[in-house]
Image (cartoon, rainbow, N blue to C red; front, top):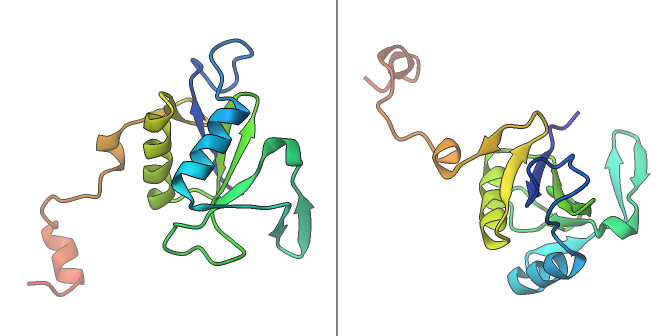
Length: 136
């Protein structure tokens, strides 16, 4: 099961009221960046799930592990962009999109993501880990 992130202008992605990301905003971003491919369904195990087209689902083709048929999914739902199949690289990209849209990146449990939280670790390697990796 995937943990979802939301790009939202609302206080929480579950709010009914508040500023929304419009279909025009989403389509404009897709056209501007050129790194999304529309999809109609997604394979989950042996099943194929059809995605409602009113959500304007697209997968991100710029992910290092994306192929022509699979990648992290972004879709417009209830005035928010929902992001599925998230890893660190996808979360960083989603934060870039949020900033472009004047929005925030929020996890499904309500946590707000920041650039500092998603930055790659650049501190010293702990001694025990260096020994395991035979760096000493």
